[in-house]
Length: 101
Image 1: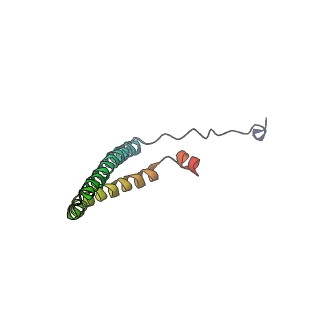
Image 2 (image 1 turned 90 degrees about the vertical axis):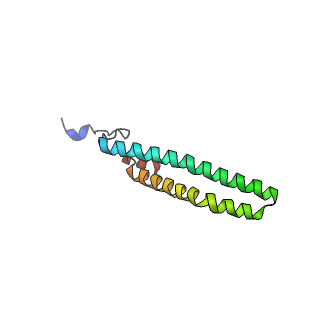
Image 3 (image 1 turned 135 degrees about the vertical axis):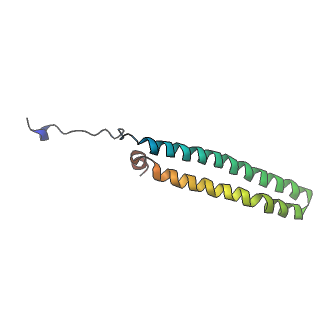
């Protein structure tokens, strides 16, 4: 029997097993991403809501002070969240990357 008569099929959903260290790293990065995402969304909400309240109250200096006080930590957490997302993209299994292309 000629092996060329029976073409083999490759299951695209079958992925090679991940090494445990990579799986743990991905799990850590995913947790870090979710935590920082929630923190920066909450920070952004508080920042905008507090500024809106002060804007309605007509207190311009308070609007600026809130932005100066809450802005930098919120933006820093957002940056860390973006770095987690960037790292997670590189550690995503090849099969998942191929599906998005």
